[in-house]
Length: 111
Length: 116
Image (cartoon, rainbow over all chains, first blue to last red; front, side, top):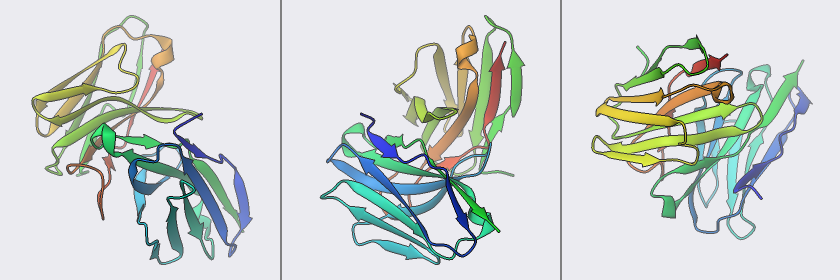
């Protein structure tokens, strides 16, 4: 079993739709959680950190469920420009700051 | 100029050749990393360095070596390239631990390496 697992998708949604991705992690000692966005053949870019209390940035909401060991990303009112691969990243404290990346979930938003 | 610069952007090399990928950063971060990305496999850590005198192996270090020439420079070498090292390579930096509010990695634009 992978340490960090994501549904690869692809998720194909119409503009304006709400879409949610989940990411599960296996190490209960995990400390920090992030969502990155990666456009085709480009570098990943930090989208959001994920806090225990949940956090929101415009149309994007990230939540953490430590009991069930998953994080989620909700995108409301999808735009064409949201089409990308979304990477879940988990940092395990015992690795002194190294992180494990999920394989990514691909989202395509269609007109 | 980009915060994290990788050179070259693309490279085709022959099996058995030695090749160096270079990374420089203007972020002032102490921590630097080399990752490779293969289709469907996500990013995997090759080597990382937490300061100039610190070098650590990642999960897939075999066949690779690194050099931290300065705080701002971290190079990755393939001593004798083989076809299964064909991949997209990313250099990244972070400020101390990539934990806590606002912290995370800053990636370079990547080097697309093809070994034939």
